[in-house]
Amino acid sequence: MGRTIAIGDVHGCAREFEKLLKKLKPQKSDRIIQLGDLINKGPDSHEAIELARAHDIQTIMGNHEMRLLQAKEEKNFKYLNSYYQETIKQLSKKDWKYLKQLPKFIYENALDTVFVHGGFCPNEPWHSQSLDTVTTVQVITKKGLPEKRTYRSKSKLWVSYWKNDTSVIYGHTPRRRIYRKRNTLCLDTGCVYGGKLTAYLVEEDKLISVKAKRAYC
Ligand SMILES: [Mn+2]
Image 1: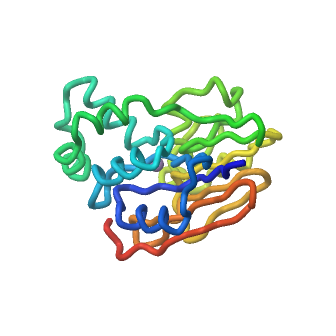
Image 2: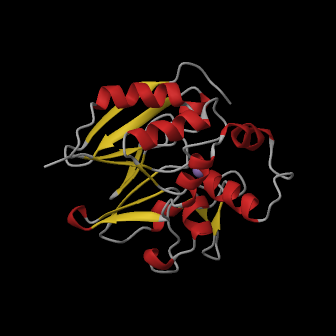
Image 3: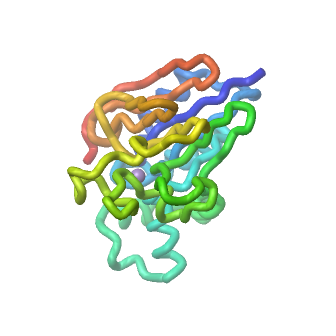
């Protein structure tokens, strides 16, 4: 039986992504899921997508992919900041096609685990939450709404409200180390900020990571 492997936020750090894949030695029977924010901020968004495609990796939609696709839909890239502009320069038609088909989350029945970029809000069943919520949530306001960590430093993390038996593996909220709380696991170890890129081998409950060559952002 193959392994289930989750990989945290790559953010265009293709060099580290490639190094991590080499360490993982992927087999044909493995299922590899990248938790979104494959692109932007780092130097090689195009290369990161190429690697994901070449290794048959299933990427989940992150807030960076979502914003970029929204801008494309609206045919208005002007309001996007400089790292989006850099990404847009790099992307091929094939890359755009890859980004367009990314799912909101992936649920693995056999593992009773959901893979998602940001997380979930407590006030609604997780499977019916909006793309905007699941890609952006970090903390929960008093009204039960999703918010960024920096805007609401006193609000509790969304995982504090997670009472479901289903496990969640997610990214989006970078920390120096992986973050476990009950049956949730955050794999964003801030590679693009000079941290690490981390993979989690679900069945073995094992972590593998590579250090960033430098801080890119
Ligand atoms: Mn994110």
